[in-house]
Amino acid sequence: MSNTLPALPLLVEEMASANSEDAYGKVFALLFAPLLKFCYGIVKSEMAAEEIASDVLLMLWQRRQTLTAVNNVKHYAFISARNMALNYVKKQSGKTVVSLNDVDVDIQLGTVASPEAILIQGEMKAGLERAIAKLPNQAKLVFKLVKEEGFSYKETADILGISPKTVDAHLVNAVRKLVHILKQEFNLT
Image 1 (cartoon, rainbow, N blue to C red):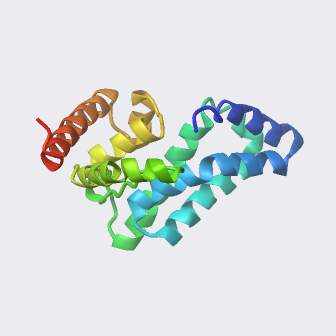
Image 2 (tube, rainbow, N blue to C red):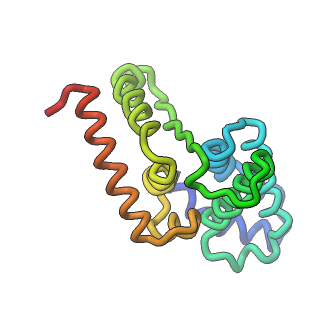
């Protein structure tokens, strides 16, 4: 995924300068699936997650003229998705303030394409997903953003509204817990 993202700034520039719907379609294709997975992890509704991810991408199109000033459009999109997802959760729960600590986060790892790889890695992937499910909510989000989406600690800190040192602490704890859980599950020493 990261090898296609350098094209993102060029696509955003094309969207802005030429009002290119084709460039927007490519931006949509690059960002929709990761945004959808991220939003689903927060809102727990596929329909709501699709709507939020689509709304974020529509907002990118509507703001295409000023979007070229944004240094990292993917980072900007994830922050927007976080805010919209938390607003959705807040509206559904009737609370005035919602923290990511209060939201139960669900992370599903991407699937492997070849049948041989699925057979070989299936049990380990399932074990890892079970181990990730046991992590605290904030640690799950940090793990997903850093390890799956490739955000830096600083970008992850911005998205989640925490400090980079807290991101590091969550990630260290998450990895320790995952190693411990996987060692137990697969009887490793």
